[in-house]
Length: 307
Image (cartoon, rainbow, N blue to C red; front, side, top):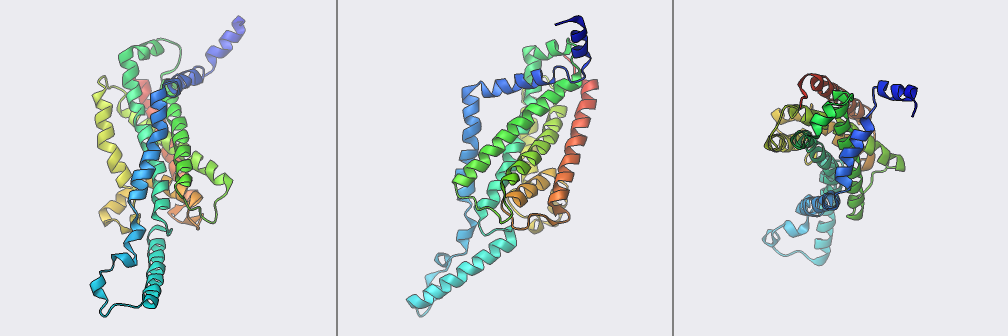
C-alpha cells in the first residue's frame, strides 16, 4: 500500500470501527458454547415462560365449579355454555391484549426481553477488555475513543438482531398467530426497531461502566436495572391496566415503544395504531432514544474512557 493510501486510511474517521466490531463478534460466534446458549435461551424462554402463562385457559368451562349447576346441565346446555364462554374469553382477551392468544402477545414481548439482556451484557466487555489489557492497546492506537465505544454498541445491536430473529422463528414454531397486516417486510421492521433499541440500551450500559475496573460492577448494574426496565413496560402486560404511577414510567420507557412496534408489525390487526402508541411514533421515539443515548456515550467516552 502506498504512502498516500496509508494517509487516506488514517484520516478516515471511521477507520478501525469494523475491525473492533468484528473482534467483539468473533468472541461471540467463535465460542461454540456461548453461541449455542444464544440459540437455546429464547427456546427455553418461549417454551417455559411463553407457554406456561396460558391466560386464555382461565376463561373456560372447566374452571367453573360443578356445584354451580344445580340441577346438572344437559349435554346440549353444556355445549351452548361452552360456546358462550369461549366467545366471552376471546372478547376479553382481544379487548385486554389486542389478540385472542396470549402466547403471541408475550412472544413478541420476549423479543424485547432478549434485546435488553443482550444489550446489558455489553457493559461487561469494557471491563473485560480493561482487565485483559486490550483496552490499553486500543487506546494507544490512532483509533478514536468514540469508535471503541461505537464498535461495542454496533456489536451488541447486531447480536440483538440475530437473537430477535431466533425468537421470532421459535415463536412461529410454537404457534405464533400473525396479524392481518403481517407481510415479509414486517420482519425487516422488527429488525430495524430492535437494532435501534439495542444501540440505545447498550450505549447506556457501556456508559455506566466506562470507569469500572471490577467485573462485579456491570453484573450489579445488570441485576439492578434489567428487571425494572422489562416489568415497567408492556412486554408482559398492557400499560392501561397497570397502577397509575407505573403507567407514567411505562409510557416513557423506550422498551414499551419497541414492544408495541414489534406487535403492530407481527400480531396486531391495527398495524398503525393511535398516538402515542402508533407505529410511526414508536420508530421515532426509539430512534431519538438511540441517537441521544449513543451521543451521550460517545461524548462521555472522550472524557472518561481510560486505560
